[in-house]
Length: 251
Image (cartoon, rainbow, N blue to C red; front, side, top):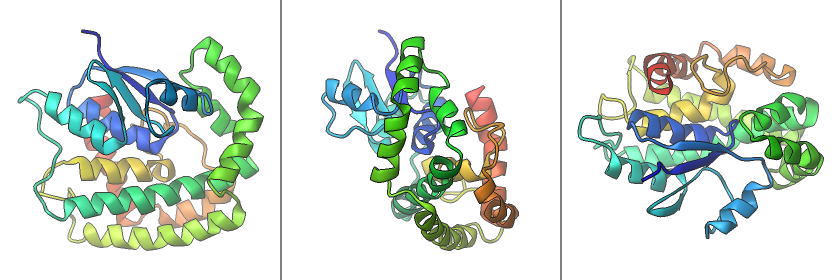
């Protein structure tokens, strides 16, 4: 039976969350990088209710949303692999807050600089890993796709400033969760909550072990904020978690 296909944007931090979980659980899969815009038709072809990536397509059908994909991966992992599901009852609420607040505002904050001021690096990241026909499609459709992203994600300098203030508060919350030098957020072991936190903050931390962000330039508009956040406990923890877990698993 061929491995399932995981459809992603290389740049997406939500896609990184799922990729990291599958890698940790040693799930064999084939990565399918798709161009923005065209992914909508692909999702519809597989009967998915939403157009967002990632989605996983295999013998069991098509799955969407990180929770469903990671749950599927847990069921198919061997007993030799440490599970990612935490026993801590707080874990679900922590992960939900990371997904719904930090993840959303990291994306809005990042794109409010990238798509407005300097879209070339983002365009290149979306193109990385595409097939030749999809690269051509991406080149042709990018001006329209960029305008759609700005509109649908509510992107702009004022919106980016608003998201920066939200992220300041979320960093304070994450710093408090890590107080006392905690290595992991739940259960005193590595879980999907750690993967969620680290992958969703990665576009701003830029850990070198990240499969897509390594070497990505820091956008000029973000430099002051990222320098100010660099030595916060949460940023240091993301760098340390990637160094400890992601390099070996991705490699």
